[in-house]
Image (cartoon, rainbow over the protein chains, first blue to last red):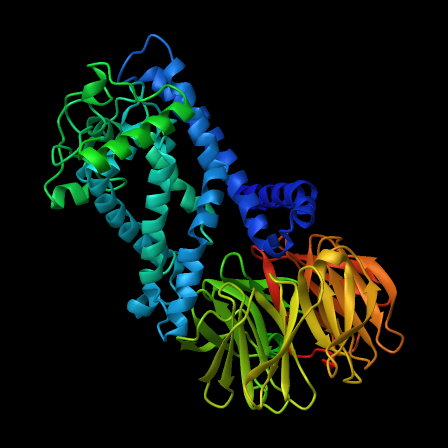
Length: 320
Length: 315
């Protein structure tokens, strides 16, 4: 038996045990037994998330200590981002988004089919992908990254969306925990956009569970406090330095058209659309008005509340 | 002809005759093929986004895999499991069935609350029904006039009249119904009620529940033993399988099967029961002379449908 098979067997047994002993017994009293298969998948999501978090701590924490982009007097400011990461990667926020998006992803899908339109998958649109799941998976990865690039540009370009996205940019001690630091309404909007996209091009094949972890781990690496540029691969993959410039005060951490380096995984989109900046400068992270004392909140709820206030201000006064 | 050549030809002939077991791994979109004689997996290949259930064409010329989310039906060679062709733009088929008269092909979309009725000759969509909610399993009346569908999300059993193409009745059936099957005498429907750990017996002519048979935890899906009298029922949360005597409408035996027993297949000689173990990426083989699991075979993620050609009679 290979190490991979041994690992997968262990993972399967852990998932089955967790599901049969901890999750499944809760479903009948909660009236959720009809969603038993979804609950089984959610158990896997949570286990994968635990594995991801363990990986981040084991590898990225030492790298932050060895190659820091910024030296901090302490890591107190990082703590709230750990909470965001746990809520996202263990599946709590994705579960809420799944429930909220239900009308969009399922009811709208069903309605479209009743009116004669069956949504397409990439294989329908590109028949050469049929029976090539790995190629299909990477095709989805590239398309979703392209879509993420444009979605990210709108998060900065639209003042009301920037009001929410500011939660993500207000971190002044940006670390490998910061990727999931987002406003809940920002999560809803992003989930809605991806749900609509899935109606247009379907969803990626779901069997590559370990491959699916890689983009999430790379996004955590992009936020890490590590002074890495990836050398000759700097223009192929978003590096911690490249993304730090996007989070830099007065460089990328801006609303309107001033920002740069929007790419999530592949800088090619920034290069193609003229928004790449491969500066060697390492600016401090955060939003410029934090220097003037603007408060974006220290704790989770304060950040959420202040995000709502900025949204209201952007909608009524035109400025977040 | 050398002895070696003779040996090779004999081996090839045996290999060609080896029966293939086809298992659908719904969680990873693949099929695992297993050699039924050696119990060894042969190979593993991609088929589509979410293959859940499969069944033979009425003339047994091909197997149809319902490939939910990918919106297609995949036709396989029933002997080898090789992909023959793909029928695209079939909306989200989850559970599928042919009416006994071979006139209708019905596909349930559990995800989208919908039952589609197709002309079985050319898979032309005839009528689409919206039912609340989560249409799961199906069974047909012996005269093909009705298809019965469990509605897992709304705790109901629906009957669709295939002559008038209308919903004839919808009745409350119990918490989270799943499998539904006609008894061999054609008089009753048995419905697995997952949330109440029992089988509901329904007189479909009067749309009345006439009996509740206590079973194991998470009573889920059925498969006839092939003797015209007994039916297996899997208890997916309790990790057991029970046997129902359809003459007395009682459970005669229950035995353990690990990891969420789901779909089943019985060998034509009645000696083996093969079951997908949904939570543990395995297929179990039960020796029916002892009712014990004698083999477990590794397959893919979330194995659901299972089929082999020389199976027991479905009624």
